[in-house]
Amino acid sequence: MEITGLVASLLRRWYVVALGVLLTGGLALLAAQAVPPTYTAAGSVLLLPPSASVEEGSNQLLQLGGLEQPAALVVAYLAGDDMREAFDAQNPGVTYEVVLDPLSRGPLIMMTVEAPSSATVMDALESALATVPEALDALQDQVAAPPSSRFASIPLSVDAKPTTLNKETLRALIAAVGVGMALTLVGAVGLDSLLIRSQQRRAARAAAVAAPPGNAAAGNAAAGNAAAGTAATGTAAAGTAGAGASHTAAAGTGASKAGARGEAPASPKAPTRVGAPARPEPSAEPA
Image (cartoon, rainbow, N blue to C red; front, side, top):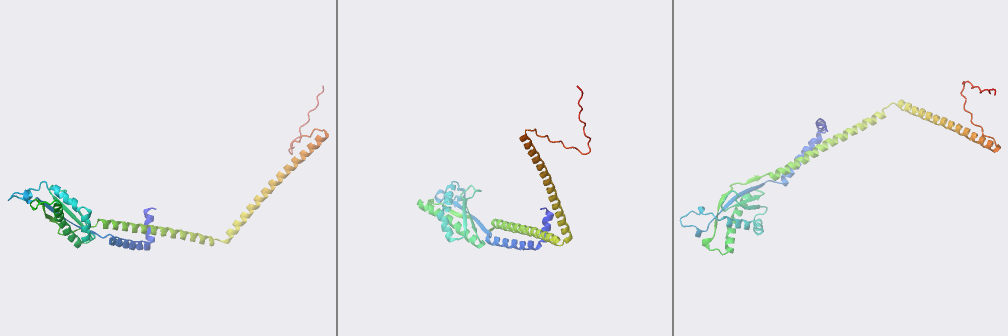
């Protein structure tokens, strides 16, 4: 269908288009409610070397080399199923991700939390950041590390407000609007085609009913004459065939009788054309 025809169909069935727009709006509202936006916040925790490895009066931040391995152990511990289940029990509906900061060469642990509300995500971020020193203490307790050789941690950066994530919501809205517009287009064009064909059939029936009766009678008479002519032609052909068959039968009977008497059967005479002169018989020449 061309663009002009499509636009004409939509204009003729404007009420279907209006209903489709309302339906599309309802689908978009349902999609927004079914897939609401989420909120995320992030924070980082820095591991510090043990006091026994730091000289008195020196800066701990200058001695961070070699702490990537303890930081990786903390990340692996927090990413385990036990810690996630404990966190989910305290913060239902909240997920977190813990990784080593890829942009830093030091022992920097990144915590990212995602929650369905802005207030919930900030509380969950504080809870997630608190698990880093707990995990560090649990690991050092397992190896019975003395207090002077135990690692410490401090929060380095924490988001002050959450970030809204609308990606999934936008996907749901686009899908809902696409489905609604497609249904509107198909419904309007299909109904328009159906109604146009129905009008054409009604117009054809009305024209057939309104036709003059004389034309129909003349048509019937012509059909009858044609049938009669066909029958007469068939009868004439049948008569000709019958005459030929009778002549052939008579000739056969005469030949049979002549054979019974010992005579040669007479040859059939060639048909004489009317008006043609008779051919003279040849005269016998004297010997």
